[in-house]
Image (cartoon, rainbow, N blue to C red; front, side):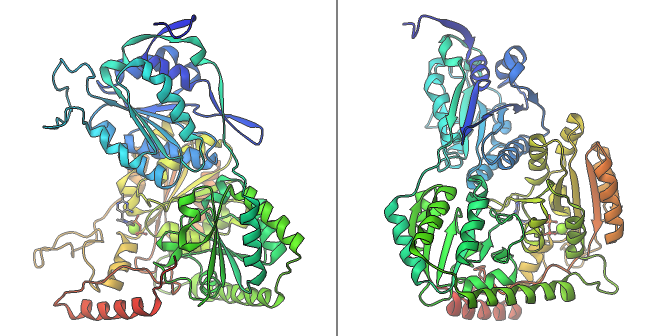
Amino acid sequence: MPLSKQQIRLTVAQAVVKYLSVQYSERDGVEHRLIPAMFGIFGHGNVAGLGQALFEYGVDLPYYQPCNEQSMVHTASGYAKACHRMSTIACTSSIGPGATNMVSGAATATINRLPVLLLPSDYYVTRYQGPVLQQLEHPISADVSVNDCFRPVSRFFDRISRPEQLLTALPEAMRVLTDPADTGAVTISLPQDLQAHAYDYPTSFFEKRVWRIERRPPTRQRIAEAVALLKSARRPVIIAGGGVHYSEAWAELKAFSERLGIPVAETFGGKGAIRSASEWALGGYGVTGAPVSVKIVANADLVIAVGTRLTDFSTGSQSAFQHPDVKFIGINVAGHDAYKQGALPITADAREALSALTEAVIEAGIRPDTSYAGEVREAKASWEKTLREEIYCDHPGEAMSQAQLLRTLNEEARDGDCVVAAAGSPPGDLLKLWDASRGAACHLEFGFSCMGWEIPAGLGMRMSDRHNEVYVYIGDGTYLMNPTELMTAAQEGLKITVVVSENHGYQCIRALQMARAGRSFGNEFRSRTAASNRLEGDYVKLDLAQNAKSLGARAWQVATPDELRQALQEAREETRPCVIVCETEKYRLLPPNGMWWDIASAEATHDPMTRKLREGYESERRALQRFHY
Ligand SMILES: Cc1ncc(C[n+]2csc(CCOP(=O)(O)OP(=O)(O)O)c2C)c(N)n1
Ligand SMILES: [Mg+2]
């Protein structure tokens, strides 16, 4: 039965390409192409399907070539993050390992609520060929494939088994990608034979379609309830998360904070939510945040969480909120997050909720408490003193510290540039030290904290902005895990500047290990010694700069802040991808801020060191942890 009079005969893969080429997003009257490009690595699963389709129909859906399927998903989520979720990139993989390589990318995107469209290939839908190369056969479930691994890490999953299913699957995929509460990885599994099967699709399916990214308004009743809480609060604080960026609620957040005199602490996702200098900005907050924000939050009687998931890094594993009568307001597009901590939930877009709240408090005549302003000022001044005297200073006989590295990078970054980090000590260091009020944005992926996200995500950010510098700040462990997208950056002439802190190991994990187990084990890049049969020998000599050169980058090896500054200035003029390897002091990580994190020491042990640490852990847990519901 024809579905409409006008039809066009296309393969399933050609229909996907044609459909994606005409999808748009729109918010506040501004339209963007929802999916302007597709990344992919071809194999037998997609070369004759999507590969052929991109070649014949891909004029408006340019193809990009990554080096690794996980990386291409990271590129897509980095791109989406920089576009504040208005656009993303599609990713096609072959079946089997190509598909499963995308699973970590999918989880990273979903946890960070970043839209990505994944098109893994799948086994033969027609079955008569028997198992195809790379097919996992499930003995009692013939319709299971490795692609079922995508289900828990996707916000929408469909396996297409007939060509006409695209008519419902693709619109639903677009709806989820553009829904602020539901968005994340969307996976459409495409059997390899089906990709090449033809069907007479209605031509109207390929007409331009615009998907509005809705701003959900708050209800009047919730705003009134929030005003009542604000009226009686003496020490309110705002915890700003990634939702502030995604909603582009920067001005509304600042206005609300300044009008009411409420200090703002920023989570990893929310870093830079206060974009210009403000006496109420407390900077980065959480287990690795600045001590000033930790102190103010600990004593707050009203915590207003805006667009944050409140993970353990923000709650200090439920030790952070110490005021005996602390109350919470949760502003979030997702009900799941708005209700956390037993909060008064305002299930709404951050910008809408903050402007409604500001209007309502003005009407209610609520005035800021001036003594609170003095306290905030003092706490900030004391942190600035610590920075000057203890953190940025030289330590004789030691290599450059990561704090000195970061200060140099911060000083060299200009308005419009951005810095990217996800794992190791870099995201925590940036959260604590990066001054976003200088104009350079800070994109931290700490939802999944996926080592290897940084370089590909930086590439995605570069794709969204070809003018400003994109700095990727990573550790040596992270560089070793995934440097290969430097080749894609070179291939596309997309410059990113990667700054690597070479401290010869997974030093942030070693520091945690020393605090909780008390013994260094398995976290440094050292060779095996015969005596202990452990990795306790010499540090392995690496030449990461040489490695980066081999992948098409220009590279520098530096040892001092001045050398780093010089390299950063040269990198700014460069068109190729750049990698600056900085030797840093191994154990000179940034000092902790006093916030607790529930990482348990071993409950049973013969090691006196570990036993002592366990005792400390238990007494801290008893003293600090409390629950809010
Ligand atoms: C894919 C992945 N594997 C493991 C981890 C756990 N992990 C977190 S940080 C880290 C060490 C990172 O080392 P490096 O990049 O050198 O940074 P440093 O700790 O030295 O600052 C590890 C292994 C992770 N976050 N992601
Ligand atoms: Mg390291």
